[in-house]
Image (cartoon, rainbow, N blue to C red):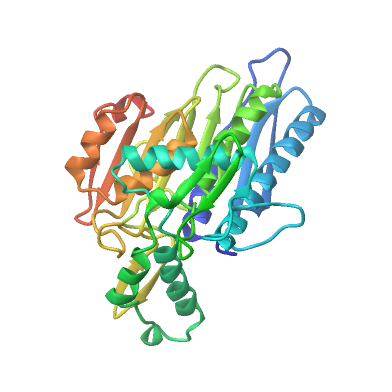
Length: 360
């Protein structure tokens, strides 16, 4: 996970602030609006806005939610070690050596990823760590270069050699023993397409279980709404214009189309303007098509709206790697899922139920 705030994060966080996303509990008394920001989880900015009966109630809820996010961040990390924590990095380091006993929160996330692999025909594949690691290294090197002319690309041979170690069937999960084993010693997991979204979903469910009946959580732009506003109306979320993305939010460049009504829904976007580097004037972004092993070329942005943040996170990546008709067919087959595809010709296509969520 990169140790910097992405452009997408900054723009979407600003969008949240500018839209005035107010959240709250169903009023028992007069409710007060509170907000907090964390900077130490998933290498991005987290904002939570809530209406609660007291500052003490809000602080108690936020302390628990923050600790939950920290725990998920450590468990899903593939780059760093933490004292007393067995995480995805630990699994990767033991590839081909021995099964690793892991926390239930890792098991359930990996099981969702396996399900989404099957659902999307392999378009989301957390076993692609060997390939994604190559692209990560080239992007990191580009960031250190003084000039774009020094940036380079991996070779097809290099990528294809790494792709020999991306078979998700080599991910062996023993639910009874609570172990994970990578049977290919050259294989590694990269859970960037599912980890953050799944974590957001789980921390929001835990907060609800603790009594938080209304909130809006933004983790690097992954939005998840709990309940409704105090007056019963829905929150509104925005989609950044992928053809006019900016590090600074304005009404003209960062909100595309009408604001989206949200209640107990997640809104997640993947775009080619988030993490990328440039070689010979061409942008090479971070969403890699499993079929070509190169950045997917179908869209500039894909947004998914559905009740589950983990599923939404997976679907944005998978849909980004599918032709439009194939993606539309998948979305229409899923209950409660809507999507918007933004293509390089500056056209936006939405699923059949998308307009029903637009703020009138």
